[in-house]
Length: 526
Picture (spheres, one colour):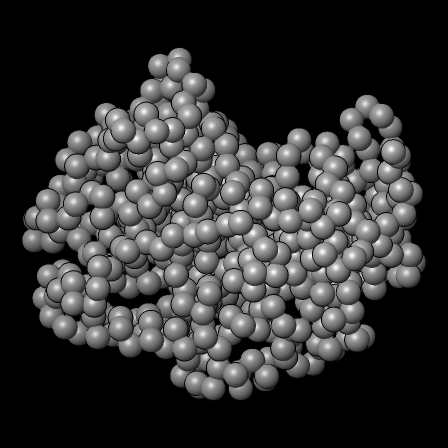
């Protein structure tokens, strides 16, 4: 049977948000066509086997889940689970000439003892407990709003109902709150890291981009917990794709959209499928699961300047976990949570200053975790039996600009510098623990912002498609918009029937499905 020439909705881009939108619309009885230029759906939320001859399915790009609402999982009947991490984080350091560190997790009493061991008293733990009690209250107030019509600033502030929390997270640079509450440099750094994931900023950046990043990292699920996707990220996007297909959505891969025309009431999408030439289909609504830059190009508009990405993503497969210099901690606990490297408060400030000047950080900060400790299903049974483990490393303060002159050489040097920072806290070099692939090469790969721009078309390599936005509309804006319109849901473009359902939407960023849900609600007139 030939494909129809018109649909209720055409979705451009088959990342997880586009799939969520397709599933919602199809389940509502709408005819849906989704176009994805790559050979498979999933975008950055995919599982793959990057090392030849090794049966290890890694979450190659996105790797943890926090912002995905249970509502979406329930609404779409997704066959998908996550597992919690019993350890939140471990941060190694050296004090008084001896290796030590800060282990957060394993119960309140254990965490309190770890703080006292590191800092010599109760003050820092009490400050930590009070600070995260505050962010927890904000999370419980804000997270439910992400799948509701976009609130105004005053409305969200009233829902938070805490002037101190509002000022600390929404009005003043985060560095102010951190420095007022914490005295220990390492503790300050651990708090700050959540403000810098994929975000190139200083603790006192007046733009507050660090605050926005921090907010999204502490509100997920109303708790701020970051969970491990069972089966890897591909299990999530595979489940959403199955839901969309089961509801009748047509998912077409290898189809690249080249143009969108709209008069605000009807739209047409032109796409190319391999060497078969171009075809145009009509639609009542077009939902774009791509960057604002890609959307502008499709509409024939001038693209906005991209926001610079600033991360180094490294995937590794190990024969065994490395031993630690701090023998008080089991590596199986240290790597199960987030393992912070060179992320003291002053270290982060120094790395930012060096990168802002165009040079790679001399001591690159990064954080690491081991997916397979929580979810061994991503490894073949023989690898599990032999003790193999995965490591995912996410480097901070490595903006695209530092790779501009000699990308491959800078990437290789930066990778070695990053691993050297890790080695400072290990009793054996990480290189000795790397598993070989089928050709005898070490199982390690690194991806820079420029790699992500090339492979996934993320402008500037920015994993959020741009700077994150606070989850409200300014009170001077028409937050309500036309009833059921894109402005009401934070997904509007200049065309009433063209909606942005990617990470660049208000309340976008991360693996959440929220922009997909919100664009679908706008298209349905909810």
